[in-house]
Amino acid sequence: MNFCVRCGGKMNETGDVCTQCGIRYDLTNNTGKIVRTKTNGLSVAGMITGLISLVFSMWGLISVIAIIISSVSRKQIEEYGEKGDGMAVTGLCCGIVSLILYVLVLTIQGCVV
Ligand SMILES: [Zn+2]
Image 1 (cartoon, rainbow, N blue to C red):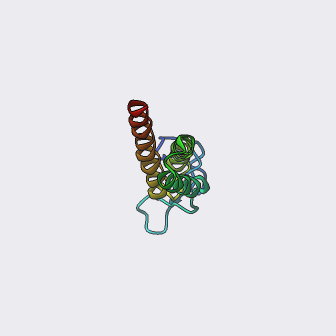
Image 2 (cartoon, helix red, strand yellow):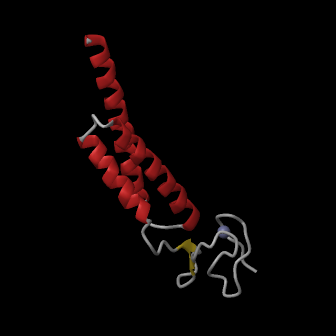
């Protein structure tokens, strides 16, 4: 019986899928490397909202949305071993930067007014 390197759970009969976290392993080269088969859909959404929030950083809400979507996406990627972590990180960074810009702009406006 093989055990999942990620969560320590039992593998299925063929030993390529973890019964606990559902992650799939590549047995062809016997490295036990996690096969990232599909791209996480939310990571794309997170990156796009992150980039939009950077361009339109006056909309404070959209950067919060980008941060939330990207965070959820990163959690899913970690959980299911999906692709798209780079995009989720990009979305997260853009969201945080634009949120900081938004707060700065609000602060400056507050000081001027
Ligand atoms: Zn597992």
